[in-house]
Image 1 (cartoon, rainbow, N blue to C red):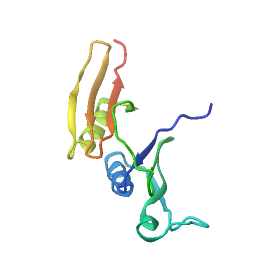
Image 2 (tube, helix red, strand yellow; image 1 turned 60 degrees about the vertical axis):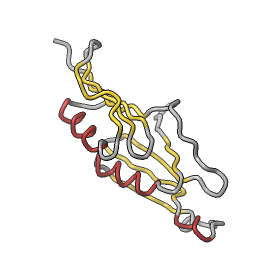
Image 3 (cartoon, rainbow, N blue to C red; image 1 turned 90 degrees about the horizontal axis):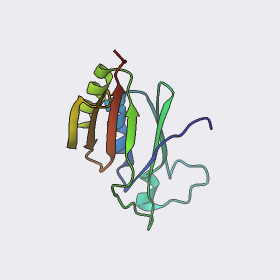
Length: 137
């Protein structure tokens, strides 16, 4: 297996979410709407929905799209996106970048398993786990 990349689904606000994540994490964002797709069969309001988006930073990829027509997304608590961060400072920066409109379920803190860790649900309903494994002492 070469990679295991999360793919998020939204109900019409994928562009807003992915631009928010780009602001929080940095990286290169590519977005294609249903209307821009070759041979696209979208009409009306659907043409501006995101068919596919991809945010890439340091070899890590986050992808997402909007549901279309009757394919509405139901949000739940069965999946979280876990970020394995490179430093405490990076963890702080990413967490801060995600907090606008978020519900913090566990503030960043040192844990008994030797990590710096926190959890939140962002304003789009996505659950995030941020983890930095501290060097052994």
